[in-house]
Image (cartoon, rainbow, N blue to C red):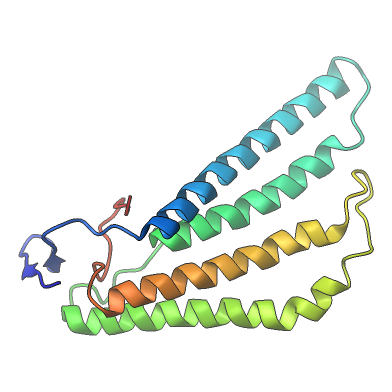
Length: 185
């Protein structure tokens, strides 16, 4: 797909807005829903703990741990969501100085670095992850592999998003750099 140069944005305008394929849109929506649901669980757990502690003088033994673990999962799930939408914080020092083709190369290189870093973290942390199958958390008695496995899975999804985004930017179907607050829904 070819575009025309725009003096306003300094980049390429596309005739139609970019849309991810259906499975990636479904994954994007799932990540969004899970992130919001986990945030709600965190808020309810903390609120319940405060009420139980200060109103009934009987704190819950599991409330803090549930909130802490859901916060970890929420953080990494939201990280996959942001990676998929390419909405992470960027520093645009080169945006106006490089051509669209050069920016495409830089953006693709950055996505490959993210993907290979995530894959390396998955590969090298797998033996350690296997060691967390038996230990259980102190209050919930949950196997710790569920806590650490969620983080491990998130790196896998981030790698997937980075590789998919790399492909669409490399072939020219996605804009080189999304506009601020632009989403691909």
